[in-house]
Amino acid sequence: MGKDIAKSREKLPYWRRILDASLPVDLSYIPIGLACGILLNASGFNVWTTLMVSVMVFSGGAQFLIASLLATSAPMYSVILMMFFLELRYALLGSSLSKYLHGQSLGFTALFAASMNDENYALNYLKFSTDKKFTPREALHVEHMTLVFWTISNLIGSLIGSAIHIDLTIVHFALTALFLYMIVVQLKNGLIILICILSGLLAAYFMVLTKSTLGLVISTLVASFIGFMVEASIRKYLPNSGLLRHLKNPAGSPDDVDE
Amino acid sequence: MEWNTTQHVWLVLGCFCVAFAPRLIPLLFFRTRKIPVWFNEWMRYVPVSLFTALVVKDIFITPDYVVSIAGRAPEMIAAVIVIGIAYWTRSMAISVVLGLGAVFLLAMVV
Image (tube, rainbow over all chains, first blue to last red; front, side):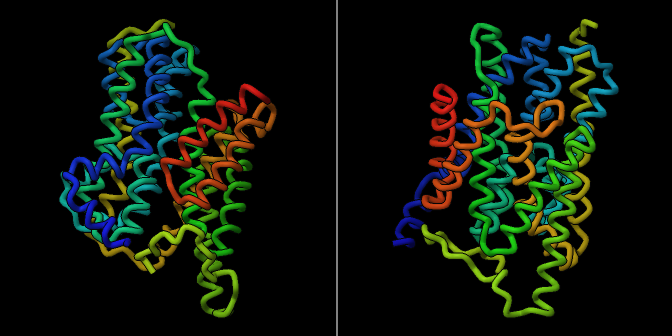
């Protein structure tokens, strides 16, 4: 049965497969992108600068930050500095995808990096780790598909301006749900669950400590490194430990091709 | 201070630079070099750690970086629902759509 599904997917045109793969993010970008466009408009951006920022920065968090900082009278260097700390986590995304993008051309790497963000990284990481046939070119097109949805939503938001009121925290939950989904599908053994809890606690601690999303970077680095060290020690000293035993998957989705 | 369009353009260009550099440098570094095995093993824990950190930020951290659960009941309940849906269906689209629906309804009730 699984094979039949795979076969019927092969028959779909290429753009449809990319659209299908990116759809959850595309759809959640519509309300969030609209809200972001509305806020940017309210903080003084016109349609062209909105177009520029959504294509060149392409990050919901960053664009919301720009909008809110422009509302206060922060000097430009401080906005850019905060942006730098906010965007530093992308270094982690790139590092963890690097094994799938090994040996690509310089131009491809630059193009891929330019439109990578949390959401399409989530899609691509899942695709790469579960589908052996998924190519870097398809991953780039997934990025561009999400970029199209994001940019158009931003522009429409900018054009309708302040005519509509959107409750941001509710709309933003679409992304939270996406990340929760990504966590759940990666919970393959007890150790990963422990690392998850640890990462959550560290994230809260470091974000309060640094008063910025730099805390996200620090907690991710620390929690993932602890996970890696614990796994290595368990494999070495306690090879029969239950911590690394595979958990049951009720939906029976395909196994990780990495293993 | 009222910003004009030229300043907005410079701001976007500046933001592009600081957003692009962290995205590009690791990919560029590992493009041709051999990636060490230990590094790959470490990076396998990055997604799950990062996503958890992002969820914690979205639900428990206020915009001025204080831990607070005040008024976050709809998100917290919806988060539990999403975890259940994701666990049983393994569908990203269903998880996101029902999660958004749940938080919308809960926000009206709670």
